[in-house]
Image 1 (cartoon, rainbow, N blue to C red):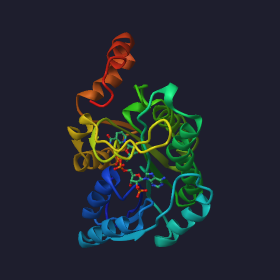
Image 2 (cartoon, protein in one colour; image 1 turned 135 degrees about the vertical axis):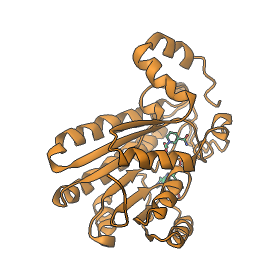
Image 3 (cartoon, rainbow, N blue to C red; image 1 turned 45 degrees about the vertical axis):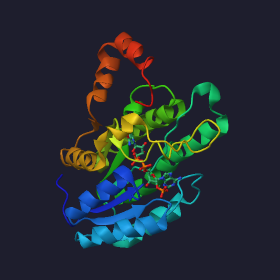
Image 4 (cartoon, rainbow, N blue to C red; image 1 turned 90 degrees about the horizontal axis):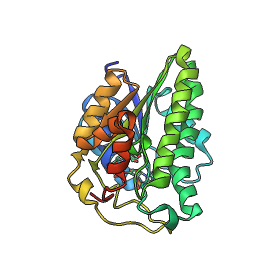
Length: 266
Ligand SMILES: NC(=O)c1ccc[n+]([C@@H]2O[C@H](COP(=O)([O-])OP(=O)(O)OC[C@H]3O[C@@H](n4cnc5c(N)ncnc54)[C@H](OP(=O)(O)O)[C@@H]3O)[C@@H](O)[C@H]2O)c1
């Protein structure tokens, strides 16, 4: 499915990193954009840039944490153009703490933002997708959605949960032309580690060495758009770290021995 100007694309987490890069790439394709995150002013700047590139852009700020009014937010998003073609479930936070050091409250917060808010938006939008003859969820998971990784216990759990939920949604709604693309990035150079939370909920506030050397967000965004155009159900984006998906699947002992020794900041 090639994307053109008739497409309405809603991107959460559009104020930074992968979401912002996706907004800019879709703007070049003259799509109509709905941009969400918490920071209204930053979203306005992204929207202004997208308009300069020739797209229409509507800013819809909200907090994914403890999201109670997903139905109202979805209906405000639908009001922009009357329909939505693609929801990119991208907004999220990461974790930098071991299991023993992570409080249940912090785990619940990560699950709320990375999982419950995503399914709340998805479930509310599904009805409109069905009424309009179809639609697509682009779910930004992670390589940590395919295997566990030190210092990412609940983050990995939240991303694994997205796979179970959205794969089921795709199976149940195949006849309605509702599609799902699960995106599993590896190390992409964004502020994700700076914005990650530690075991007591404090901000981690440091750029991981591995992230610093990661794939540029713009390259990642182009690969995501390509995967959508090729109607891919699942895509892994990154450099050599992507090999770990295949080690986990075909050489699980090798995977375990590498992953347990990895320095999670590199
Ligand atoms: N970078 C990587 O290496 C990598 C790897 C695998 C997966 N991912 C995934 O990619 C997605 C985007 O991350 P990124 O790397 O682009 O990180 P980022 O630069 O930190 O961007 C995160 C985005 O999510 C939004 N966000 C965070 N908490 C939110 C909340 N409570 N309510 C609403 N919006 C919220 C942020 O906007 P506000 O602060 O304005 O709310 C921001 O726009 C995430 O789902 C992440 O798990 C990233």
